[in-house]
Image (tube, rainbow, N blue to C red; front, side):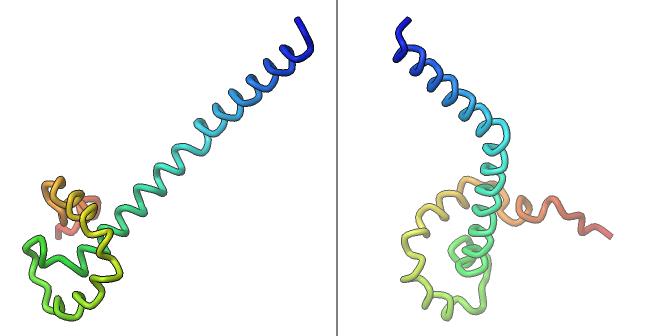
Length: 99
């Protein structure tokens, strides 16, 4: 074996160890944070534009003023919301509101 082959193998081993450590420790935390960010964004959009899903919103006239700022996110949000069966029950299902 030449010296360059040994160095390349050591580099590959270090990269593999680094990828393993990232997947083992960080990947689940990143997934959790991404899921929480999507849930927060969905809740925000639901509060602003719930009338698009058939939920009455008495201040929809004022929330339409925000539409130009978040228009690019609307299509993705509508797709995610229409895929879900029960929007509100999924969001608040983890809380027990029964007497």
